Picture (cartoon, rainbow, N blue to C red):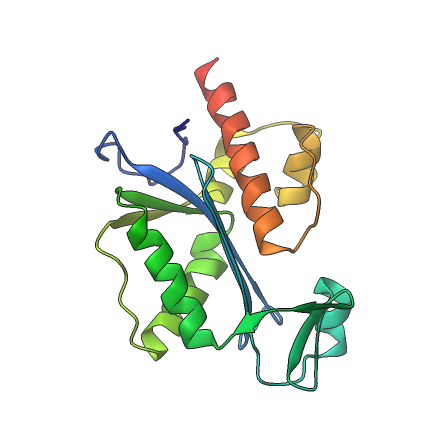
Length: 196
C-alpha cells in the first residue's frame, strides 16, 4: 500500500504513482570518510540492505557507537560476521535497486539534507556512478517535524525520540535497515497527524 508523506520542500506535482523509498546510511563517524551500510525500504515493502567493506580498521569510537568492527579483512557488527562488498559495487547495487523499482522515486531521509545526501553524492561522484532516471527528488523529514510537530514531550527530533513519541518499536538504532523501517513508520504517523 503506497503512502503519502508530508514533507517540506517536496514538490506537490509528483506523478501519482510515485514511490517513497525510506533510506539511511551508516558511516564510521560524522566525518563520513568510510561508508559501512546502505539500506532502504519502499512504501510498498521492498527492502534493500548492503554492508560495505571499509578496507581499513575502524576506530574504537565507531565500534562503541555502532558495533562495527573490522578485523582481518572482515567486517563484523556486535561480533557477527557480515557479508560486505567493495564500496563501488555496493553503490552500484543500490542504484540498480532503485532503477529496478520501475516507478518514479522520492528518496526520503531523516537529516538527509545535512548528512546522508551529501555523503551519498560525494561517493557517487567519486566513483562516477549515475543516478537512475526514475529518481525524481529527495526529501527530508527532519525539517518537517521541527516545523510541524510541536510537543512538550519531544526533547529533540532524533529517530529514537520520535519512535518513542509515536510508540513505534525501534529495534536497532544506528542500523541503516532498522532506521529506514522506523522512518517509514514515523512517516505513516505524520501522515495520520497531518490528515486530522
